[in-house]
Length: 130
Image (cartoon, rainbow, N blue to C red; front, side, top):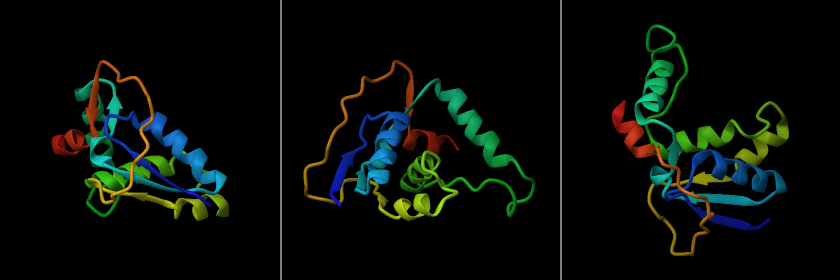
């Protein structure tokens, strides 16, 4: 099992998440730093509106989908959607994923070379709009 450190700054969440999910299923341990700087492509108002609408579903506060306002937990939850969560294997490899706000390590983090979209919003900006 190898340890992979990924810097999420200016990385598209979907593309980075699919890469991370594959590495987890291969048996590697993945650590993501700067998770608040990861970006979601699309119009800012549409993305924030969908998240607000999803958070308001369900009625009183104890019901409905629980979406975290912490960037590291939100990113981890997005990546969980790309894993086979219903199986024992998916739940086991999910434990090998660590997400951090800021850079907690002194080691060199890997950057994925993904082109930046024209319209995007960072996870931190999205959470601030809630």
